[in-house]
Amino acid sequence: MSEMPPIRTNPRREFPYILGIGFISVGLAIFLEQFLKTGWLVLVILPISGAVFLVEANRTKKLGLLIAGGLIFGAGVGGFLFFSSSLSLSLEQRVGWLILAFSAGWALITASSGWVTSKRVWWPMIPGGILFFVGLCFLITPLRVVDFVLFVVGGVGLVLLTWGVFWRIFGLIIPGSLLVAIGPGIYFAWGTDMAVNALSKTGMMIAIFALGWGLIILFSRVVTTKFIWWPLIPGGVMAVVGWGLYIGGDPGNAPSFIANTGSIGLIIFGLYLLLLRKGIHH
Image (cartoon, rainbow, N blue to C red; front, top):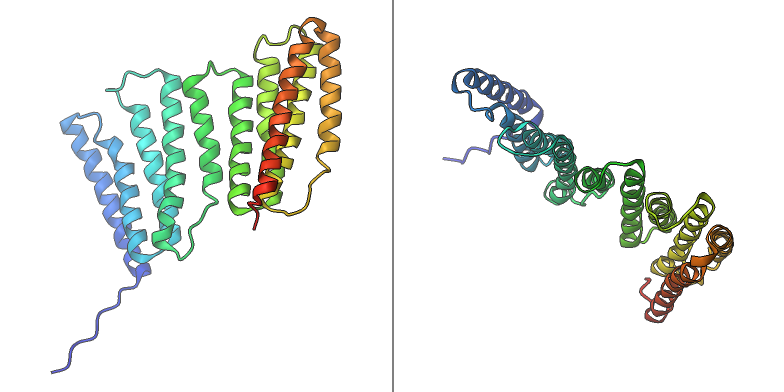
């Protein structure tokens, strides 16, 4: 007697069943909450639904289900932290944890994509990284405009720079290096008392911007065998202009400021020479 062939299931035909189970679970949770009054039963609906999508994505190898599952799971965990009455958190902290949990959902897509597709997807790390730094801003800063500039602009730059270095994409290294310097430049100039007046603050900001061009030179060794010299032109001009404005606005502290920014520039160039000797490019 011959063996019967295995029955092949169609994921598209099974998808309505998944939605049906999800709707039934949501309805039961809402219904039971009316009697049990737990305060948390409804809050676990989204995380559980996201977990169902993740399991189904792993079974059917569908990236779309993985994306939906990761986002729903992250939003569900964040919603639980935001609305939970058992956590003694301020409104700012609840918003911060909500955003951090949602960013973790994006990271979960990248982490799990290797099980679903033949090639891991990295693009979710961009929105995930941006949301991560925004969430940190809500948790550890007084929520000034300059705080968001530091975390959001600098965070976006760090994400782009990390991606460009890891994948050796020079087109991402350039904006990443500049944004990494722009965020701190605006923050330290206008969000601290390191400069005494508008002229010196502007000079400090421009001088710190110049360091971003130095980072382009440093990380260019990852992707090229040639000497990248052109960032020295805008970087050098901005450094001289920044020093000039700072000296004009605060002559007393000018020597220490020039020494500090100059030393950072020397460190960047020294690291570049080390990478030049190592030849880490391929």
